[in-house]
Amino acid sequence: METIIRKIDAANMTSDDFAEAAKLLREGKLVAFPTETVYGLGGDAFDPTASARIYAAKGRPSDNPLIVHIADIAELERLCLNVPEAAYLLADKFWPGPLTMIMKKADCIPKETTGGLDTVAVRMPSHPIARRLIQESGIPIAAPSANASGRPSTTKAEHVIEDLSGRIEMIIDGGSSDIGLESTIVDLTCSPVQILRPGYITIEMLKEVIPDVVYDRAVLKREKNDNIVARAPGMKYRHYAPKGELVIYEGESRAVVEAVYSAAAEKLDGGSRVGILASEEMAREYRSRLDRRPDKGFGAVIEVVGSRENEESIAANLFDCLRRFDAEETPFIFGECFTSDNLGAAIMNRLVKAAGYHIEKV
Ligand code: TXA
Ligand code: MG
Image (cartoon, rainbow, N blue to C red; front, side, top):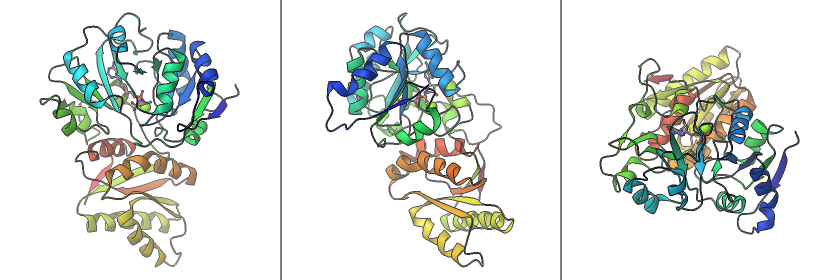
């Protein structure tokens, strides 16, 4: 299949820009589109065949439910049963935006869309292109992240092209996603309300609306071998992983620099290429140490993910960095841990998974 790539400028768009995409969606075809978190792979949420095609295009297990995207709060009553008061309070504060809420599903949502569950995840994105696409197509859009299953999520159209070109009808290129990590997911069907996936909307922010909200235990999991099972089916799969083997180091920052550098140097000594996932603050240190080697660090690739002083920069670049290591074909990657406060909870949740829980304490 030939995938149409359509560039849309959010600052200057008209209905015409969306006519073809909206038509494709109404016909049960697939269109990838930008959101403020990551790119989504969209299909008609009411059409079981469209959902099946989404799973096939991603190579995703079909027990892993999709998020349904809406542009109008009135849709909640149509898609969900017994919408709780908390949903309206949260929507009031955080929608449109990077928050997904799980509720009991209404019959109009087929089980194919919810991976067989009787609950549905709903989100109202704030990205102008996503909103307009939902409005112009006139249907709720089921969309997982627009990456091949297991790979890092996509934050640029180029990433989507890499993973899904030839497998879907259209990709809308709307530039880079601002936030760069997937939405926060809260489950409103349990009491207290649980966070199934941390994201840009932090637990502190949620507590202002729902004081007793807690993390699902799996969110904070650090050990591969403990028996906690994630309640969001998608969170149990190998995820976000670069092709190379990633190890992250945790501890006091001097010790971490030392450990990351030594691990990288050992791989270079063994004749292997190696990647270093570095904060802006530490990148200079790695570079100057590598420069002092006889080989000048040839074969080492440093990717700067962002500043330790600015968590948003790290969130925005993380998936792009992991993908760049794939392009550089580094079989080993070493990196720093970040703090788990605020947005750091979401960053570390993705990083720990990308590393397959391989964390070295130094
Ligand atoms: O930011 C986002 O949420 C992006 C953009 C495109 O909106 N979407 C996204 O979708 O990250 P996806 O499919 O990659 O992740 C959805 C997660 C999965 O872990 C899935 O298991 C969980 O949400 N989920 C969806 N419906 C659920 C449900 N009814 N119960 C529990 N978990 C659910
Ligand atoms: Mg995903």
